[in-house]
Image (cartoon, rainbow, N blue to C red):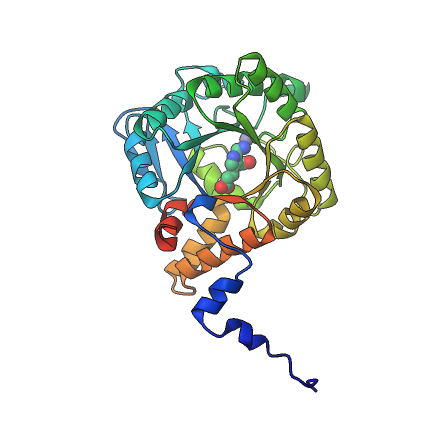
Length: 331
Ligand code: PBG
Ligand code: ZN
């Protein structure tokens, strides 16, 4: 039985103007980061089969692509490189003329004000697909050598900063990676380059379409020994605390929707900005269901992004950033 006077929640939802006045969360084009995939070669704009709407672009074409991103109103991109040459140590990631440094320069030239984030990891550059340098434990048994990996990641971050990115985003889940990178950046005079740490990155099956897109699925084994166990939440807070201590400017949670509780807890516990990555599998689910006519893809997508913002993310890395920005309009 309702008490009197009856509490009428519907007053809060009466018309669009009132709903806008009372909305607790806003989603705008400023909150979105567009991932871009850059490859070696020339005159390539090749659609990625596993990621609807995304393409591989060669570095001579990435400038054009980023102009369209700018037109949509999105002001930040994150770059992933797909080199022709992969080897055991990911050495092509340490080439100042490599695919990502060239892409950074091309993006900067094409849209100087674009915020450029560069992913720092080895899995796109190693032939084994792991996020670090492997060490043989016993015959045929390999594990990622944490400290040898730190060395490569910090050199990679310095090269990306030299090329002109604004933010480096270490995603290898190596212990101490944020500190190692901060020290290296400062030593190279890059005090102004930010670190966006993939602080709580889960060992998730939602990364499938991305790994297909960059051919980085581990050739043997899995990432369970360095990425987080999906069953754990308190451990994520520990990861975040360590990264902040090491000098992370922004911490990222990944994936997005299945980990809203983590985003909320990190947001409520720490003062640094929180980012979220709405990953390839999340995007693929929406696209596949929409294609079958089971859901309205655009609406489900916007609702997903709103939910991630509501949980506490300042911004979201997401494959449909450009498309969402067009739907959301200019303000
Ligand atoms: C690389 C990296 C991954 C993603 C972003 N950076 C994949 C992985 O750990 O295999 C996943 C992104 C996505 O699925 O959209 N360390
Ligand atoms: Zn990786």
